[in-house]
Image (tube, rainbow, N blue to C red; front, side, top):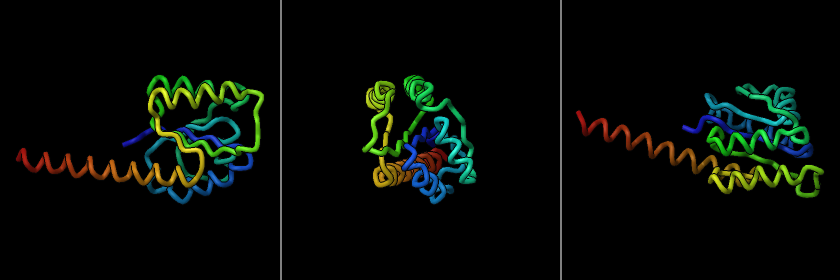
Length: 141
């Protein structure tokens, strides 16, 4: 089971991320949500009942913290709800984070539709792994 999920949302997308996570709370239960500063604050303000680890704000090194966590294998999935109309002064740090996800092969969704498909794929994978382990256990008895 995927344990650590990084979430980031630009200001315009924070309510969308909060709603997305709330609607999938059952699947997310038992998993740790790791969020950059303002995203973590917005999730707490929305009373999302999930375990949330709070990192620095993106502009204060949060993206670099996430990059290091991705590279060290501490992040298994990323939901990054972007506002494609903005450009950030720290765009190089954002690009380094996204590049780390691609290099290490970490699933990365940048909008609710891709996040939904990513989660559905992971549910299917987890179900298949559960069936396989139960089948192997039955065969060994």
